[in-house]
Image 1: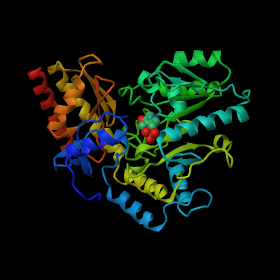
Image 2: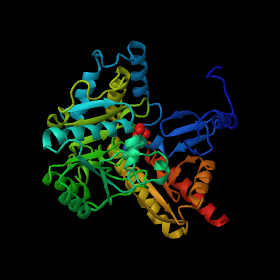
Image 3: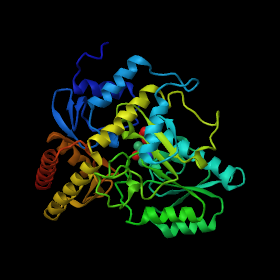
Image 4: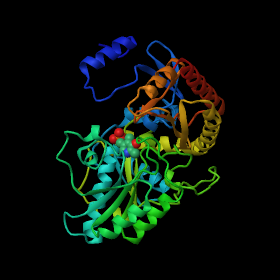
Length: 428
Ligand SMILES: *Cc1c(COP(=O)(O)O)cnc(C)c1O
């Protein structure tokens, strides 16, 4: 069997259906090529990608600078394991820690692994630095969180589908309401064994919930007051997605162009993944300063592929693209435009209740129940009209195009979204 052999969309779907585990429910479109903001299906139909692989492809599909770096490194040295040094990991660690303003980086591959890593670092810090009694550390998490799919992570999720029949669950987590500093303070006050607070700056999977303006800043202040680590999961919100290099830049009102990328709300532990590689390769990372990261010693943690040479050069290239092409600023400006356009449209359309988001991480709320198929049906209609998006939580549609989009392309997409919704409303 040759990978170059063309197959139809129908056949590709049938193969997955028959031979693949059914752990996803994809939109029925089979993609075979990507470039910038576009993808093409097996029959050659062109689409705007409004999911960007859950914000992994912020730099656009197959960005030549990232691909070139990857191919060259793949031909030179791909994997050494960490049993030996390689000559690019250190360069990447230096570049990334300088970019984000931390002393050290721990390289992993997937987002979930990086979250697991952050939790381990936090617990070890709690025992060795904070002085919490062994095996009693607690980490505060939020309702409706999404941090990945591993056993420990689903243990503190409240998504029934993600959890049911995967127990017994890992202990040591306290779940509180998102965007609620009163609940956070109460929990901190009542539990002296709290080691960390794990939070998404914007809840992406939950449906693009943007917290109140001062939430992150106040939460961070509370963490400082109670000597608890503020752990930001920026796997989805990071790398320019929300109009800043990091969403924890908050409302620093930087003119973007000159944004140093140093967050105003500085997490104690920062978790990155997805667009850290521009979608070319699985690359994730945990960043922290020495006082925290130094609790990790040889043998405490690792990954065969973590920090491999390809990942290192890909991540450097991916971060350089974000800077060179000013993707944070572009996401900021296009995001403002997108929400302004949709906010003007929504009063004329009974199908949509609201648009919300930051930068180019946005969602529209469909005027129907979570159980209804309306959002899915709208996504099917959008697909017919050349734009790919996916519902999250039933009645919410996330819109997250690659950040390399131009203004004209965005307006073209707004036109597709509006005409699709109008046609859908008429036929309903
Ligand atoms: C996607 C995501 C993860 C998990 O990343 P994987 O690479 O799928 O394991 C973790 N946290 C957040 C906020 C995410 O969006």
